Amino acid sequence: MASTSSFKVWCLVSCALLLATACHGLQVGYYRKTCPKAEALVRAEVKKAVHANPGIGAGLVRMLFHDCFVEGCDASVLLDPTQANPQPEKLGIPNNPSLRGFEVIDAAKSAIEKACPGTVSCADIVAFAGRDASYFLSHSKISFHMPAGRLDGRKSLASETLQFLPGPTSNLSTLVSMFGDKGLNVEDVVVLSGAHSIGRSHCSSFVPDRLNSPSDISQSLANFLRRRCPANAGGANDPTVAQDVITPHALDNQYYKNVLARRVLFTSDAALLSAPETSRMVRANAKYVGSWEKKFAKAMVKMAAIGIKTGSDGEIRRSCRLVN
Figure (cartoon, one colour):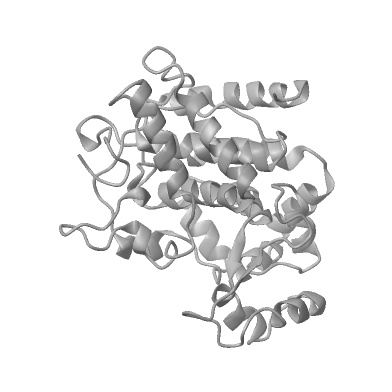
């Protein structure tokens, strides 16, 4: 159970965002009458998965981001390839083979369908799972209500993933522009980048521009990575490393300390120090205990309201991997 202080954060964040999300048709407690156990069922599956493998939790947080930035928060990232659509989002370069957690969504959907068939969208399950993974990986320091009422989309194209998802080589202007296109601001860029305090990365995502080319990466981290990553990482020869070697399984503000120490993997991480405004935000998030967690909760709710499908634009899938 969350601590008293965590519960206060949960309430404050949720109340502040209630009006903002209402215009999207999203509501806290959306399934209170139609499927009262829905959120608890999702949380149970996420808890089980994160305790078995914290990396799956990192995958679920990343899944929400990758879902929402392409076609909106509509579970389009979950759709499997079919004869009609052989290249859905999950086969896009940013998602394949690195995106994880699909089996957790499947398990949650299965449990919910048994309790209340045809009621809860896969898009809402993805949003709940991202919230719950944040809660468990932060040791309950990130705790908030996630409004619901999303419908599942029917369109999913691998070709759109590179178009809409910022890559690890992005500079600050690219990040700000791509986030801005989704209604997110500069602070959201900095705050949501903190999710890089968890999870792992394939060496091919950073070796070319951070190790094989001149960069500002700390010498100690560069030496550590060169012992683990081949110079020509890719294909079958592409190991993974922790994105945060200090607290690899904790969603915390260590990421910002790593940015300041130039001990981060991606150009997009280092880019946060390339402008005075974002540099100040990084220093504040590194310094003030508990501050970033509140901002992250708020930014997650804001991101989870991108491109919501309503009415005839969406559906409630029977299987999260297939359109009805």
